Image: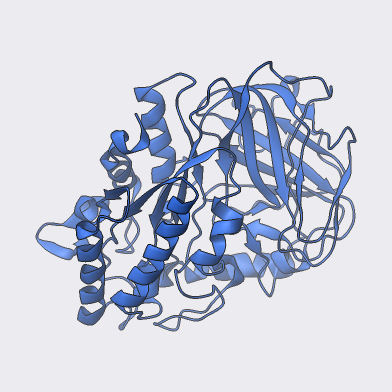
Length: 434
């Protein structure tokens, strides 16, 4: 859920998009050798992000041209091999990928976010070739790469885009610094050549799978900016899905630990498009994504090994669009039916409080009544496979329409690091088969 307080962040990103150099793509994949598949293992989703089309102005619209993008991702579970997924789903043309590499970060240097460990650097290939083309609207999957990945670790994916990409396919609220530089920097150990350093985006990169033995699959989080980590510390991986992954690994540090895939989109709504404006003069953006029901076939069902889906959406439909409880409940029920029809476990989370957030009209007593009506339904419904009562976790007992001050990031709608930890701790592990 994107917030009025964060409009200046979006505006700054838009300015970067207009004046900055074109954006880059990230890719992933195999090692230099094509023969790197572990025996008798299976692929498991370890990291993923929801992507949208580029905004109408700025870097995500003009795209990248003979530029490299270095992107940092935090995987959930590890394994002896990986493969990387790139997406041109929302592009307007075919996109050339010149070269792509994967490495581990060099944590011994001063710039440990953009510097990589040169000994770990490996080229990615695509059906045996170092370069490839992503067709318009298509994905590009790298070859399997024998590259040991540790649980709960960072990877650095660097992709060179040798020719103009046009509008990008990207994720707009990464809560992670990423890096753009001129030319082919895929083999550069030092990050000094990456002169543009936005904290906003992953470009064209949509997923990383690892190989594991007897994987129990993956948990997908379908949420808004609360899942996307707005309000949490940048570059610290303190989003509640990250913290839930840490908890799962601590409870069962073996091959039976599910991956956690965060498919949240800041500002996403159940019943509205991202470009639709909201109350309090909130403008719409493509990066807020299409309506959530339209995301199922792109963001949820195709994920590698998905077994469980947590849906935490609806608060933006209230404060931005003043939707009725009936409209919100109807779409939550439809998402639940589609998830269960595929044989997946469907969990739902109650809507968290936000009194005090934004301009006048963003929070009203009538909108609070809508939130309470949705939560009352969710607590009493027996349609879902389980309930995560996030409202009870974050609300102030003395003022239930507002966040507990100890969990408030300061904008009165997004939890801080402590609030994200409380959400992760509140998930009953039995609902995840633990």
